[in-house]
Amino acid sequence: MGAAAGLTALGADSARPPHGTGKPAWAVPTPRARPVIHPTPTPTPTPTPRPAPWTPAKLTAVEKPVRELTQLNPPPPPQSIALTIDDGPSPLWTPRVLDLLAEHGIHATFFVIGEQVKEFPKLTRRIADAGHQICNHTQTHPISIGSMARKRVRKEIVEAHDRIADVTGVVPQFFRSPGGAWSKTILELVAEHGMLPIDWAVDPRDWARPGVGHIRRTLMKGKAGNIMLCHDGGGDRSQTLKALDTVIPKMKKRGLTFVAL
Ligand SMILES: [Zn+2]
Image 1: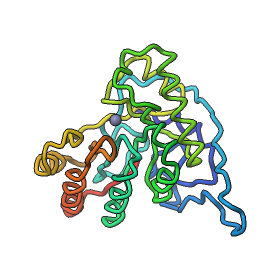
Image 2: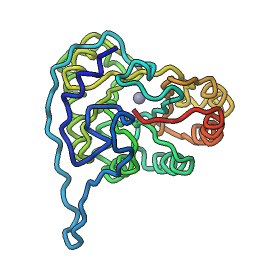
Image 3: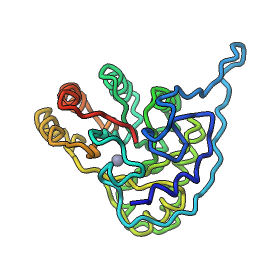
Image 4: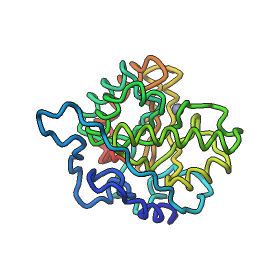
């Protein structure tokens, strides 16, 4: 509660409306104004995106990661639900996930890995350009991060931040720890770097390929206010895609609205 309020101090990047405003996307007055990343004076060959300024905010560490949308300030409208997509970008699966989200007309939140952002900058920009939220999921996705020393955690956070900002111009406002491993150190550093720690309430363990039916059934248990976890990285995501293709329209029929953080 109230933890997100401090983020308003972040409003750094006025050129990119839904991003970098320090508020969840639903709190931004111009809905889904398309962010202009590369103003297109035709003859100029691919202008280098300008890195967003690195402005560590002075936030108090929150005690617990956010699992429900109601913990955000301001909270989204009551019938909202959030789909988060982790461990990309993946050259094979991310484009298919993006196509699927576009087909169903929804926005999601992508927790990307810095090393992959470096390897696939265009794909990362495509995620941002489509209006999805881009967030920090560390530089190398160390699953032992919960027991890592402060210096190494800081490096994981800062390197991913710089990579994302450099490639997309987006200042990440949200952080998810690999495997949902949290420590006091992680939470403090996440706050120090002006981000909110994000967990999830619904986990179909799609990364383990438990079958389309299992993924679908678990996701369908999602309720208004939940943050749901899926993946576009880490291997074959065809089960995830198949499940989402039916889950998204069913949830919309129930009156739920998908929101990006
Ligand atoms: Zn992950």
